[in-house]
Length: 323
Ligand SMILES: NC(=O)c1ccc[n+]([C@@H]2O[C@H](COP(=O)([O-])OP(=O)(O)OC[C@H]3O[C@@H](n4cnc5c(N)ncnc54)[C@H](O)[C@@H]3O)[C@@H](O)[C@H]2O)c1
Image 1 (cartoon, rainbow, N blue to C red):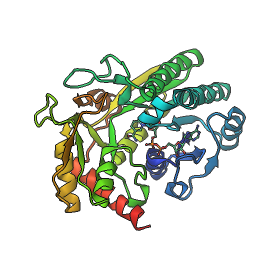
Image 2: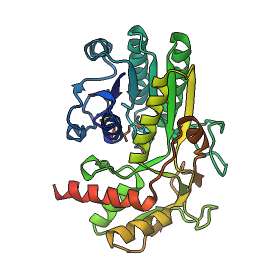
Image 3: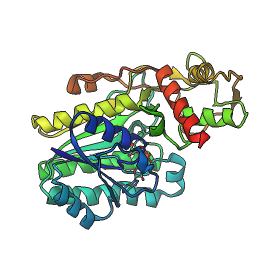
């Protein structure tokens, strides 16, 4: 098989490209470079510069490289931006996916993996979120991921495409420093950013109904996430998957914001006391995956812990900030 990885020069996409190419899969990346670091791509993985909104380009790429499967990660991913610019988010995340699926169906490609998010669930009041938990996203970003899943499944049924939707929980870490996330949108880089500015980390709300009063999340190492993509791609390639699969990708373990900041303090050596501020609207007290279905369906489980995530992210942060 030859896999096209959209968003392949992004943070997660480059990890997926590296894991798949490293395991001997034939891979080509497509990225419009709007949020990319192209140097992240491993040698031997060609990069086509272009958008998932360009159907003619997709057709050409499918033909030129003999693409037989697609791993679709390209998307806008900032929650606050999605609230300010919902039309752009629907156009690029859902519209881009519709254009891609049109080209996939037209080219007779029969395997597609879609990058979804725990944001599809919104704020469910459950101990462990299973794939059966009601989806009720609370922002346009999460809505575009849920609408994307619906579109993927419907197009899969109509055109005989086997599909896998992976709902990632909180992604962190880096498989190598140069692959690290350069954005400051997730908690780990946000805490590094505060410390680098000589400021105390912030905790938004310490009065939640959780053991230490701060929000609890399920953090997953991006290298584990990349291995889940490889396992899913292989499951698709085996051809025994008729229809669709939807899987949570997390560790199934909750870590509180305060616990995470303590680990950051241990790793960086900067143990200053965090400041507690008011709750942010829309934050759920707890969002932890049940990781059982992914284990059953893919034979995959995360193996890396929070300390490894923070250590590897810190090495990446230092590399980018030295530059
Ligand atoms: N990072 C997380 O914590 C997280 C959590 C859940 C889901 N996701 C999803 O994972 C995917 C990858 O996220 P990431 O963290 O690597 O983000 P990222 O911004 O680093 O990567 C996205 C890549 O896609 C490219 N891109 C964006 N729109 C494009 C388009 N229309 N055509 C071609 N390329 C385009 C960007 O240039 C970028 O390189 C996204 O779909 C995101 O919604 C991420």
